[in-house]
Length: 266
Image (tube, rainbow, N blue to C red; front, side, top):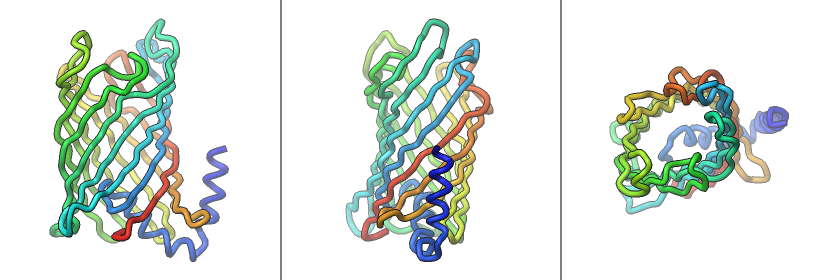
C-alpha cells in the first residue's frame, strides 16, 4: 500500500510546475539545521533481535524540527525525536511491548549564513525518560553536547551529525548511560526533487565497548498536495555491526513522510 501511494505522488510531483517549486525545498530537507519547519514521521523496521535472532521491532519516530531566529546573525534549531515502538521477543520471555520510548531533544545554535561554504551548528542534547515501558527505554535522564557540520554545492549535500550523552539522574538500579552517536551522511537532489541519500547512524557504548552500526539507503520524492509540501521516502537498512546477543541484525527497512512548512527565510 505504501509503495502504491509513493508511486502516485511521485507521478504527480513529476509535473514541471511542481518540480520548479519543490527542488529547493528538497535540498533544504537534506540539511538537518535548515531554516525550515519540518515534521517527519520516520518508520524503521528491525529484525534479528535477541540471542535467538527471532525478535523484531518497528519504530515510528516523530521528529519535529523548528528553527527559531535569535537575531540577524544567529538561529537556534530545535530537533526532537520521540519514538513510538512496537516490539516482540527481544529476549526469551520478553513478550511484546507497545508505547513511547525516551525522547531526545537537541538544540543547535547556528549562524544564519554559511561560513566559507560550511553550514554548522552546536549546542546541548538531552535525553528525557518518557518511555512507557521498562523495555522501551531506561529510566534515566541524560545530557551532553551535540553538533552538525555540512557542505552543500550543486545537487550535493555532505555532512556529519554527532552527540555524546551521559546519564546524570534517574533510577539508580538501572545502568548508567555513556554513549556516542555519529551520523555521516551524503545526499544527491535532482532538479525534479528526487533525493537519494546514504548514511550511517552509529552508536558506541563506552560502558560495554560495543558498536551498533546500521547503514541506510533512502530515496525520497518531494511533492505538493493542495499547497502542502510533503516528502515521501522509502529505503533499506543493513546492520553491519550489532551489540552481542541483542541485535538487531541483517536487513531492515525505512519508510515514512515529512511535512514541510517553509519559513519566510526559507
